[in-house]
Length: 338
Image (cartoon, rainbow, N blue to C red; front, side):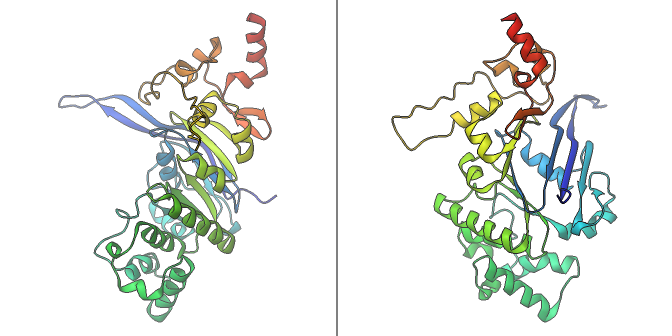
């Protein structure tokens, strides 16, 4: 097997909390991302899901170095070359790698400069990195616009002249004109109508096959993830609590939090009652409870959950779960104590 394109190990991003007063001492930390670990194979699509505030977008931005990680390593292998740690790479050394990793943003309106034409927006990455100019630049812009379902004559128009779905296609064209190997899609279809979502997802699939792309797909819509992804990582309070193949996660979820998320997915049937009955609120990343962060809301909590933080371990079916229920030692003690 070929080595992973991306290897994330112990990734963390902590934001300081400052006290009041003139000195403004650091009084605490917001652990937005805490010890996130996963691999991403070439050509794979990994979904990153969880409630709002779970750390999905922060983790994605740390991977691309839009934010500087507090801890951990992000090993990226561009063009089958040696792995490079993006987490600690100086800015000057990071710039040559930027064409190999691009991002598709959530909001197609705010992510496009309203004062630039479509042609200028799509061509800007090539201009910044000095990869094309003149007739070659125009040809590459026209070619990528065709591939995303737009017309080359749209180059002279401004973003406000397009629909939401068309604006997202412009954002996709801007990301793919660099021919990246890694694309992070941050809620790339959440702002679109359902019918347009399907069109954009199918477009991303087609482009993945044509350009041999690898996707990190941040989302909260589990139906979209089921359709689009190969594997899924579930985040809660800044940590991955389950990592599984997409079919296994949707048919046999191992972590209680994953089961709660799936039970909240609405069904188009008035006779099907939603089963989302998890008590309490999402854990505060600045004051995480000891042990498992989900234990105050978990109906299957037992003694170790309150004191020992679980690690991602094998849970069967290619799934890894951070849950003491799947730890043979802890599970045996639970059975012994009733």
